[in-house]
Length: 512
Image (cartoon, rainbow, N blue to C red; front, top):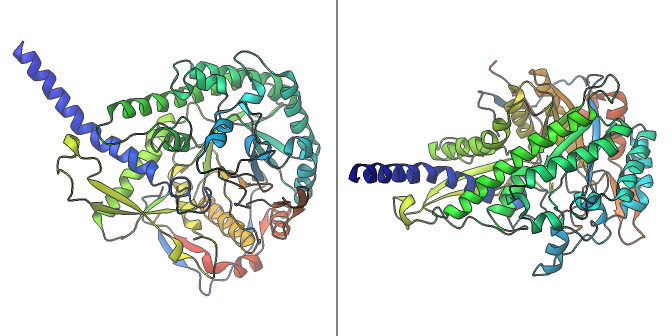
């Protein structure tokens, strides 16, 4: 009996020792995601972060480089992205509608958004003028299934009407099934924590595929947008519904809840992947159905390249940000990899001597990994640091999964449209560099087509189309669109354009 108790005690001690660094790492990863989790950042899109390739790549600035035209392959697509909730305000039956009403201090809600449901034709007429080839629209689950098992035929027909109109403009739709908001009836049943969540979600995916996807022969699908953000904001930091937190390293309840949600999201993805394929295979002509998810895994670099502790932090965050979710899914339940990228994160490691040196005993935060401000890295009054090498490194990280890659989000807050052209050009250059080094990147989607509500207000004017909120939501193309349109229609970035923006480009010299 004593032997058994001794074994049990030993196992418990070992478990506590091993689980601490894992929980600690998860906590740090999500609490330091720059764009979504740092209250000092003016826009939630400013700095979500993505992982550095461990290959010994040298970064060299262009000085007297002679550029040649960059030509993208014929099958490479250029596109845009948006979501229902951010452009319509939802239908009042989501957790986010409740969240906005109860927020303190008051949160500027989306209202009717950009009145997208009534004015989508204006948006896609302009998108057609630009030459947009693929547009991703995130659907609102509560609009399609407002109550459990009740499918709103009018909502389904409205989405079919929208996607059908896109096709008349030469724009291929990409459907994303979820963009953070959940129907209230799902929340009442436990939300992401419910053991039934994955089956609810797979059923929803099947209905969308059969009623919208099949009639319109829609090829491109995303099951989720940024599952890492759902985990971080809703189940670690507690800033978004359902406001759950991991309070400290001994919070076993919070840790178990997080593990449950991770598992449910993965299983919901796998089941919905199969539901879409079962409904859609053989219904898009010769095209193969492409189902993936839009991930924001993080690109991390040491604040001090000479610091082993800073590098340790980077390795830990890379492991958690990439391996825990993206690489766990592997390739069997994905046809392509969707990557969202806005900027990098610098990490700085601190040891707090105020806490017990045995963190699994009673410490709350014995170590701190600081997110280092990148504001000092701005050049010539740019609104943020531009770091295209981060996108190159992110793509190279996923290259070895041997799946097609789509950059499903990349954009900039720029109400005056001073830097959008530069931002697009240098990131497309980084994508092309990765393609030259063997990455199979097949598409790029700028966030976003038109200015939207960005989860904390209408401050982040990121659209190719300007929405004038003081003039009846009038739509107008921003000047930078002319450059993007030329790139799209010629599949080429002209050498003169590269010369113009070489200040922020990085010449990547690989050791391969």
